Length: 427
Image (cartoon, rainbow, N blue to C red; front, top):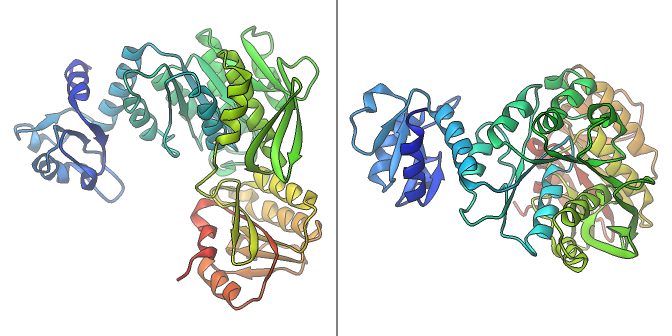
């Protein structure tokens, strides 16, 4: 790591950090990562020609090329630099993980904290072994607090990311049936996600815990730096989930915290933002404002009106836990007619067909005028129910364009790779 001081100095002079040579601009710091199909070293000289301050490479043939900085392994250097820069900042970092709601919760907390602090939050979902160090290196030097999202689909990943981030606070949104294939089942999900709390407890950090996540109680039992939030008596921040004109809201300490999020299942995410805000001393009015002004995007719990119909667009991610919550909310809506459009849930391993079967049965039991599914996993689900299945989103879109739905309420939910948001496309 004797090269880290030099890289820190270059980072301080750079305009941005890029791993895609097409995004290089004058002053960029380009990391020549190797991908499955592309080797960034092949684009290092071009990056320098385009104005990059430096290209960090690990191809020995580039050692003597002006503008190239050679290391043994570019990814390792990126990760080590991210941690070194984090150490230089000396600010509190809140790390966040969970099976569902990570990005929504992160954005709510960011919206609350930035009312009184210079706050940085992970952009998009840069939450893996590459995205996390990129996020760390993007924290402005004048930031007072940072929120770093951490994702995983195998045990050990959160532990590794925690060592990179060195958080002093942490939040696990929930433990659900996500990435069952990689984690090896629900117990594996719990073990993998709870690695964040384990790290924090080993380093005297503070845990934010939703009391509804009873599966995690044995992880933090006996630890004294815990901020409980939820609907249980004794929670440090206690609130009640309510619906406010169809949108998620929370009644807490005599105040109504409104949001623009669809679905009562978002109440836990709102409570998390309230809890973190109160911990940092944010004024209650500012907490209310931060939550109320957050606008969901990227097809996460969005309410859309299109072509005379209404859509709950939640097509960024899906697993059995989040799908069940979305369907139960859809059932509770006092709106008719309703149509459920559900896309395959990925990375479920041997449980895939059983979980898809269970979801179809639930969808068919909640009074929908029609249940439409997309993908081979839903096609192969053994339900005995009358549903309509499409091979892909484009074939569904063609069919929808031939229908005459009007004043119909749609729930649109599926895994990101299914691309259900394209059903509203024009082409």
